[in-house]
Image (cartoon, rainbow over all chains, first blue to last red):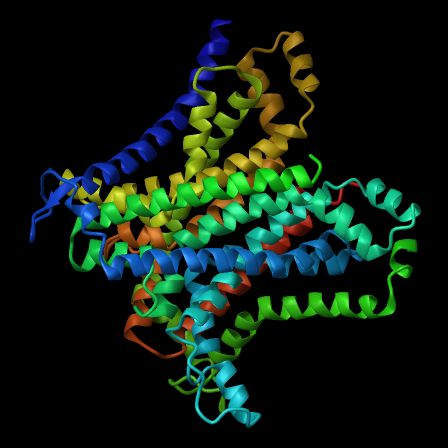
Amino acid sequence: MDTRSGLRAWLVSPAVLVAFCICVALITVFQYSLRAYVPGSLDVGGLTLANFTGLNKPIYLDAFWNTLLLSAETTVLSLLVAYPLAYAMVRVRNRALKSFILIVSVTPLFLGEIVRTYSWIIVLGNNGFINTMLRKLGLIEWPLELMFTHLGVLVALVHVTIPVVVLMLATAISHIDRDYEKAAQSLGAGPIRTFLTVTLPLSMPGILASVTTAFAWTFSAFATPQMIGGGRVPTVSTLVYQLGFSSMNFPLAASLSVAGLALTAVALWGLGRMTRRLKAVGGH
Amino acid sequence: MKIRSSLPLPLRVAAPALVCLILAFVLLPVVVVTMASFNDKALLTFPPQTWSWRWFIRVFTYADFQHGFRASLIVMLWSSMIALVVGTGLAIAVKRMAFPGKDTLQAILLSPLVIPHFTLGLGLLILVAQFRVDRGYALVILCHVMLVLPFVLRSVYVSMENLDERLEQAAASLGASPLKVLLTVTIPLLAPGLFGGWLFAAIMSFSEFTASLFVTTQNTQTLPVAMYNYVREFADPTLAALSVVYIAVTASLLAFANYFLGLGRVLNIEDNH
């Protein structure tokens, strides 16, 4: 018994240490959000709520609104795009085709934000792929404004979010018992009706998990709004970076992060409530 | 076969077409960046008028990229190995033993999946600034351990689910100590899952950008941070060339993992029925 508890301590204590570091980092952010900013110094003054009341300015409210809107839009669009892909990946019978879809949809996940965002700059830029192609086809005379716009950031964010959503949906779809679908069909339901009334509701756990993840990931995206938005699509992440590095205003950056965390928590809580009802619809 | 043939004709054409369209969207930036990387001119134009390898040569000779590659390799190896050891230990303890605070501990360790990277990066940055500690490799590695640990945990959990506990019980009943059971039965049986978890952690660490931007200095600047700084200074296709190298290496690693490990099994997306 003694060796077992000794072993347990060895197995668990490194994880406790990492958890401790995560907590310390987060507590530091919380603590700084409540400290007065001393211009030109890394040291901070006494306790204050000024940082949070300071957030009540158009520039910060705008950033919050942009971030929320982008997260919501990205979540919905990436779900719509990723579902057919995940479905095909799980249900295609040809092994080579299955592997191809898997590699194509998963590889972007591991490329990191920089490579993916940079590639989108080349696609969206004034002399980029889309504008050149449209001009060559004679459809436009002047380049469309895609860089530094909400739409450009949104397209790139959807692309960034697809792989993880595909994976989560594929997990859910692969765990659906095919007998339910066969039963529906033997009772006379067509393929569309079978999909809408059996497959889709049964994949609801994956859809719900994807919604949460897609939302949280988009909320924390930095490179994409920073590089494609170029300062004209301010989000919480880009402002935190600006405040932290350009102005060295750690307290305000911290309070913006805390407000962002609070907003994420509220949004995820709201989604959780909404989805509990959806789960009931799914019959689970 | 029956299910497929019962699909109405428009749907039988439309469904594959839709999937192809989505795949094209996913692949579009990859194709475009590849074309751009062979463009001879320093300005991006489509399609390239003249072709050349010069940007690829610049990728391998540019000092910041060489240094960034080395830094990323150091951070990746340390953080993925530490995360693997920490994550495996915890996953085994969680699945096989009882201890107080189990759920809280797991919740904290999985939280970097939803907590923005910039928040964790900012926290660590403030912490070292507060205590006037120099930002070295240790800080970057610690940061990456926090960020990649959830992926290792997930991967080991999945493998533990598929592990027959009776094998461990058999070894124990034959007199093996808990440590011996762990080292000679549990860990060898988990090996493929552990490798998969380590690989994901390593790739994730290698391409992590946002938190790294906060915790690195000129000296510990990782490759993604060096790439970000490059775009801000230059507009030539060097970064496109580097992206192509990046994509090629990552895709072959994943194809390799798929061939030998069955990526579907590691990611838990095999069709079970």
